[in-house]
Length: 321
Image 1 (cartoon, rainbow, N blue to C red):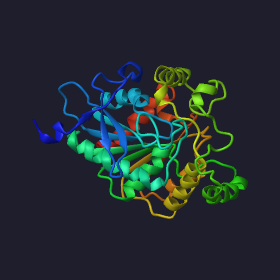
Image 2 (tube, helix red, strand yellow):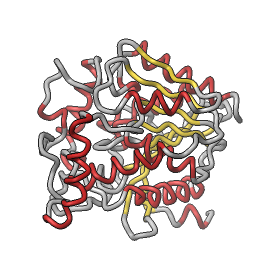
Image 3 (tube, rainbow, N blue to C red):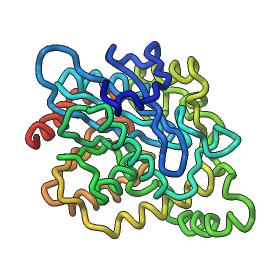
Image 4 (cartoon, rainbow, N blue to C red):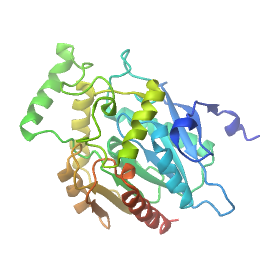
């Protein structure tokens, strides 16, 4: 057996809640700073050659199993899919003793996770070429990774966190609080107004800010009820401070020279739509697809919207093989 495959360590994968392809598997990966993260992947079945692999970079509070339905959509179109539990969420090592706090020391630390993901994907010999789908926070991590030469041929983003939607009047307060938090011992405290548990545990479907599709919303509720270890609550003050700094830093840099399509819902209430529009206006050859009506979770909207998004993504990917 290939030694690289012998070195792999299987990780739990909850097929019973993922509603994904039967080929789903997960493995542990270790980052250069010694943390353990979880990586899942799904391979298409059948006799047709696999067209490549989509590296899915999830958003904050997300976990591998949430992308089971997305993996089906990619598999049906001939692509393998991979998703990751970043540090601090899913079954990845949590950063604080209170595992429900969403925390990161520095946003750049997520790039160590990316390095571990790429290494594991190579060990698994996942079909090439590779492509990127970055959602929400994963959109910020993915954009930074592209700027640091993530080995993909084309990329797609769903409501990427290239700006965090907070009132302009509150931004100076957030910055000041972030800078003072270490001195005041508040860095690891949850941001006021955010929830201790996961958003879907407390917010009813009516009026939610994630999706207009009740079945997909219920799927998220059921997944977390079945596997409470996947639950993540609101972010810490340090996460917010670091996230704002990362968005500002990314905004100063030119767009990567890669084919790109970005999806943004007309009802977006979580990321800053203006920042997304600004980035795509200066992405040479990039396309911004504004979807109406849609909220934050483009790939967890109704079937018409999902199919439109997956068709357009894979049509783009197929041009760069």
